[in-house]
Length: 149
Image (cartoon, rainbow, N blue to C red):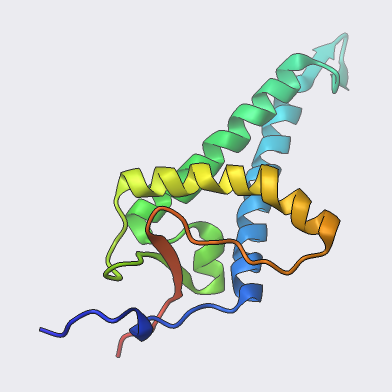
């Protein structure tokens, strides 16, 4: 049996990682906006009205965004080793130590770290025009998918 070497996994380019993150964010955002819009529709006397200022609209949108994000980043990654954005861009999530399938607790930690990164570091990097890449978290990292022959 061969010993695992992290060098065997091909590290993805920063553009590929960013593209997968943007796709995942857009999926959650579109689902949230659709659910919020559906929750805010009110029909009275045959007139359809969207009540954008309703707390129901924004509460539904926030709940759906978090829920879709959790399903995509934790449950789908647990089943398929990748979120939808990572599948599209040809990436997978692996344990940094041995390249094997990540467990549910590490995936939840990685998902929560993503919110922390998004809220704290993304605005900081945009404001300072830095080129620092997102760090891998909780012992997981991204690797390119390889085609087995």
